[in-house]
View 1: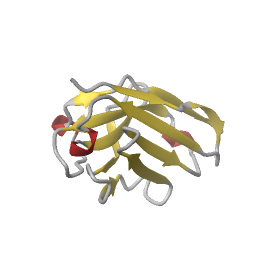
View 2: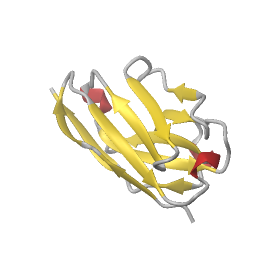
View 3: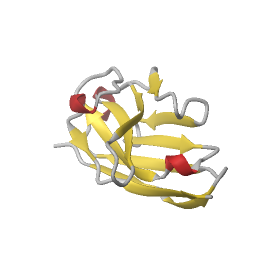
View 4: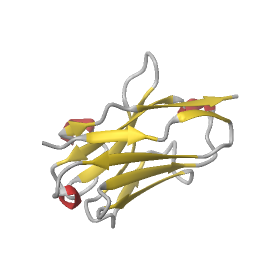
Length: 124
C-alpha cells in the first residue's frame, strides 16, 4: 500500500549535520501524517518528531528540540529530517513512518507503515 524508503544516514562527528530523506509511494501522501523514530542497539524505539499531512504542524521530542527540523514536500512525496549539532546520543537507526491521519503523533502504535531505517552514527 504505502512504501517508505529512508536515505541520508552516515558516520559523522560531534557537531556535524545530516539531512535524512524519506521517499514515499502513492498519490495520497498528503493525507498521511509522518513521523521519525530512532532505535539504538539494545534500546527501545524512541520518538523523534512528527509532521502533519499538510506540513503545518510539527511535534518534537524534548531531546531534539532546537536541533532537528522536520519538513515535507508533498509534491515530491518526501519528508525530511534536518539534524544539526549532532551528539553521540543521537546514534541510532532512524526510521520514518506514515499514519492514516492528518495530525502528528508521538505514539508509534498509531503509525501504519514503516521504512527500513537508515543508520546514523555520531562519533566523539
